[in-house]
Image 1 (spheres, rainbow, N blue to C red):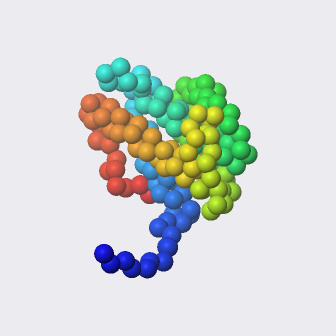
Image 2 (tube, rainbow, N blue to C red):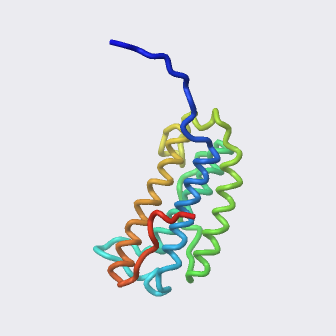
Length: 163
């Protein structure tokens, strides 16, 4: 067996991770925009939640989770505090939370990404794994939105155009 010495190199910087996440958020925002207002709040397939409810879930995770990570607060997850009535309300809050994410993400040190944190008092993983979960969860729900749009006869945004 042959071994070779390799230097440890960073795969991705924290700025690149944030850019990746915000690219997904930009695409999800465009999915929200693509929905007719009524369908955004009422249309669903197979008993799944309407896309507005899925977007509220995403809004209720990102910014609040990062605030909790920074303050080391393990307050329980709650999406009851925001109940939009219009697409405009939803997009406004989406944009506000994008800025909250930018603000708090920039406060996470490289060392903190490796620390275990009990997110919302339920999910005890390293900070970087929690952040990757936020992105994965968003991709999952955005996929549901794509299905809804296609069933409604609406072409969704290209999934590779995130910026």
